[in-house]
Amino acid sequence: MNLDLDQHRQLEALYTEYAQLLDDGPLTQWPELFTEKSLYLVIPRDNYDKGLPLAIMRCESRGMLEDRIRAVQETIMHEPRYLRHQITNISGHLGDTGLISAVANYSVFEVVEGELPKILSVGRYIDLVDPHVDGSPRFVEKRVVYDSVLVPNTIVYPL
Amino acid sequence: MATQDSFERLTWPDGGITEIPYQIYTDPKIFDREMSRIFCADGWSYVGLEVEIPDPGDYIVTRIGNRSVIITRDEQGNIRGFANRCAHRGVKLCRQRTGNNRFFVCPYHQWSYDARGQLRGVPFINGVQKLGGMPEDFNRQDHNLPPLAISTRGGVIFASFEENPERFADYLGETNLNYFDRVFDGRELSLLGYSRQLIPGNWKLMFENIKDPYHASLLHVFLVTFGLFRADQKSQVRMDETGRHGLLISRKGEQKATESTRDISNLREDFALNDPRLLDPVKEFADDATVVMQTIWPNLIIQQQSNTLALRQIQPRHPGAFELHWTFFGYANDGEEMTLRRLRQANLMSSAGLVSADDSEVIKLAQDGIDAYRDDKGVILMGGRGVEDEEHMVTEVAIRAFYSHYRRIMEL
Image 1 (cartoon, one colour):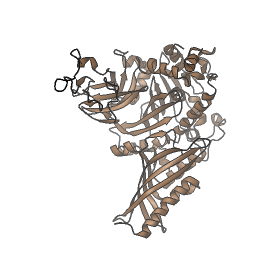
Image 2 (image 1 turned 180 degrees about the vertical axis):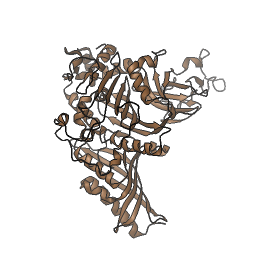
Image 3 (image 1 turned 120 degrees about the vertical axis):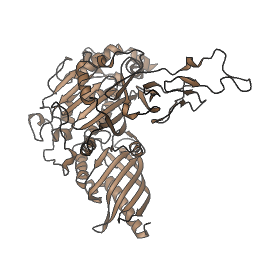
Image 4 (image 1 turned 30 degrees about the vertical axis):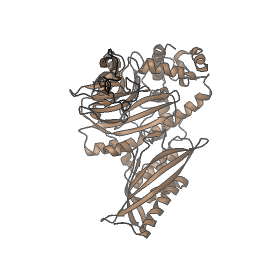
């Protein structure tokens, strides 16, 4: 079933908040956009197309998302950098289970301090969203499938 | 030309293998010599896994050094390899990374080659309406693609540009062969997936990084925090007789501060995982080693870190950059839980790895530093000046051994 205007607006608002939290923080609040048992995968397109399960980030719960954020902030040695997510072509479909299957295109620009901006990653989101978790939509599953399979060095923050 | 002058001017510093001139990370002439003497030479380069090309006609396109090659399986089931460029005008034959073909057809003039790289078809070879065509003395067999020597062991495919290279087992030497066979023990492999990154640093910095246990217990706060790699663990560094291959072997410790972590200013003793499934290693090999990092000259790293098994293939692009291609695998008889465990632990590795991100970042910083100071040199003195096997991690001995072989091959 297609989403009505209100449902679509709520879905868009979820993606907007998602981008804002990753780009401007606070990063520690980003996992709150996911349900407790959510699945978050960042998958190179060639693996996805071939049905190979390997993801470069694999979080099987909100707890694992929190662990990754803490590692990014406290243990990974990396150059200072800023991300800007552009999320477009959002579309959703309400399934019989009451969950929304959503897809969107994304691109992420990265600026490493003192360097020219570059496109860090280009791809699509293939998501499952629960529209009513304490009154707000939350990700149940999120697959970040990236076309740019040759990664320019390092992906530090979630995409 | 300036670059030629600079290459001719290179005299290795007096410190020998304890001093590395930064010029070898930056000079295009040295890079060219590396491609011809190290990669497109008599060594065995990793090119893929048998499980990637199970059926006749299956192929993968990869690189040895900076040269594109096709690895395929012929109709008899034999693995073949040859240059990925048409004998006619040099056009890249295969544009896809993987696929299945009976013939490899050049897109330009449709010259076609079979699975052995032999030229089988040349359109208009006899001309059209008695006009044109190849000269009388044109023989197709003079234009076959140069074949690669192929050797497989435990499901892993190696290739060489040399017609009759040393036997693979002799090439590795006894110790390195034993550790190779420990992972590739004849069990059927299962392919879990790929990850690729372009690292803006010289390719040798990647080998140095994996041959250097000194950094692992300092740079990798995540590893140290969770006791996966620590300077106080029982460890070995092993080389082959030439010094070109190497092994770092170690064992898991505890999450606590010790004498060896005192020097790590940002050890996170209070970092408890919200979801401990991320690090839930189980013993799977007969010995008690939990980390074995093997470096095989000239292009391969075999990684066993807890239950993540991966091959990292080094593909140099130019002096200041290389591609690192990761192939993660398990065994066909892994249960679902084991596969999940491998996939979870893969969070530590590759382009977004909680551990290996440190390495790609630091390699970039190394190249950044070196580029601007190319007449200077680096120091490799930790653990002394020797190239012998060691029983601890506070050493750069494997890097020295690597450069002793490098200097012989490169005549530098």
